[in-house]
Length: 259
Picture 1 (cartoon, rainbow, N blue to C red):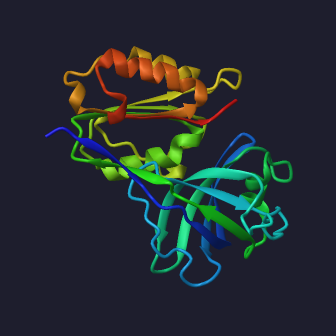
Picture 2 (cartoon, rainbow, N blue to C red):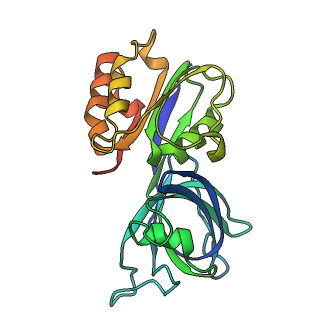
């Protein structure tokens, strides 16, 4: 039976959390991946939270890298720079959620408020989390997969690999300089892995070229495609789906960021 994708919307939710732990998972040049554990600021903040899809994500707003409160408007809604992060793991019963934050820049010169906050805010610093707005849930077992992503997509790739299991076959295309093992990305033996060198002037260009070079599937209904990276990846990824006879509604193609 071919796989299916179900898109499920969730009601809006705003949750108040605090930074409880941080772990530097891997470093590549001036960039790093930092896992932060956020815990409930008060009991019940995570009540009803679910994230069943491989790419489920939340929006996070923080105060400052020194731990200042999150700014709010006249109605009490949080304001400030929001960053979208893939859910790594969570426990509603224990009141925590883990996020892997891609931090650009060396310590003390991180780009953006959230990167600096993830890297060096004092433990206990407040954060506000919103979402997920919805989930894309994969059911069934695809005959083959194509997973393509840059650094920003690595947490989602890791979740999909865990959900799909060790017996999957297909292609894993990653445009990254990070040590995959340090990030917990362990490709099954049935995947053909291509590690592509990022070009800062043409982000996701290598991914687009590698996608375009893949052979067509034997059965389009059996190939699941996840392709996420810089916004320029979306058009060539959609073109590949059309060429392969795969409906866009049966794939996950997104621009996670824009240069």
